[in-house]
Image 1: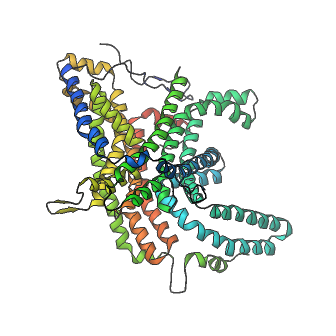
Image 2: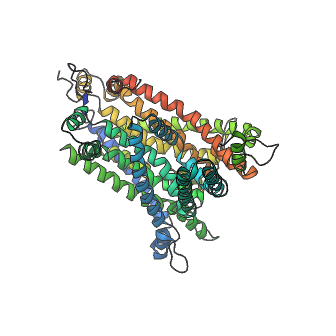
Image 3: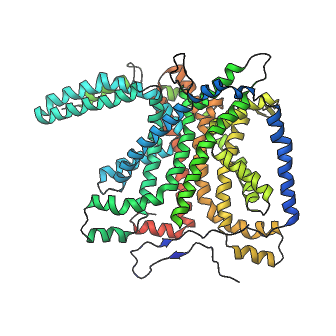
Length: 335
Length: 258
């Protein structure tokens, strides 16, 4: 019998005991899992034909696809323009929220990953709690929390925390340190108020970033930890500074390993932007829902499923394209 | 210096409105509602997990069997359900299916199933099922080819090979990712409150609309969700280390307590 050639192969350096074992992925199998069977194969094609004839073709023929031949429908789904032509929502807002949340959460996640890998007990603890907390909560709840809680927090901060902390610092900390605390408290109020005033998409961007940054932090940390210890030791013994080691040695190798995980998180993020419809942001899902609700009239056939199918297809195109890109990148690295 | 009463004075506007009031009052008073919500979240997660496992197993088997037609069906299913938002799928089931004349309000003997429950369970089950199918397929393909060849040459049929040889080996590889998926599914069940499934999130919204004490209500709900998801996370971690001793060893070398 042939040896198990496609099992996970491990090369472990048992003599030193310091190197972590290197786990190689199983090589790609060629061909199907079980040997072909002609009857079974024919049966499969028959089932596919039945599905096409009795499900796909009737859906395409009996569905009311006429509104989707109209350019106005697509304008509505694209950016929902008001009477002045200003975008009010639609796919533009979905992409806006998705891209903004992606950029913010990548940056924040990187900081939290570094914080969690640091030796400082305070940073490590704070970042660990943030990451575990955010990953364990539903992103829907987080968005809702931001939507409801942030205005309250902003008013509380402006009326109580900022004046209170400033007065306390002036009274008890002296001119130097007290002035610094006052300055920081005042500057943080800009952050709070900006996030609050950045409506309507601001809440969605903030809520999604809170969740995604925690996941991104874990991805970054796993990528950094997957670099062999010898790389670090070599960099240090060559006399590289810590920031040079991170930028020139660890990140280029780690980024390459993290790409599939990052892209799959990006797909989740794009899908999660649909949750913003629940806090009244007029993005693609809500635009589609409003479109078929406007269209519902006595005497006209409803277009509920048709609209939702089109909306789903738009999401599908974006997410599937992303996953194809990720697969290409992975194959390129495998070579 | 900043004394404790001064701190309490600072926090009063955020925590409590007047003297007879205390932080968390609306949660304590409406505790039965929240417990009902937790029960509904667990119920819907259970049924969706069942549906998703059955669907995922069937689709994964379709993908690894040597039939072009079935493979197209399976790939179309997984890619469509994985790459579209759960909310859109649930909307399609809840608002769309009744327009086709499908009645989602079921009466199964003594059990009455509301239409939102049926649509939500179906949506969550199929969405998770697509992910489960991918996880199971990866597990099935990781079983060495020599095993299936040996089983076939010993005279086992196609189904016997899968049932007796491949599946038992694949289960060990598949359990940790499945645990992750089901933990994510528990969190995703919050989305179903958008179509009126009376789960934890729905009850929180309901209580909030009556009392407007958002901060304490949603903090309590976050705590309830943590109580549900954190043990699952620990279970997954334990499973991963149990079935992957190499990972546990690697973590131990880095100083983690496993």
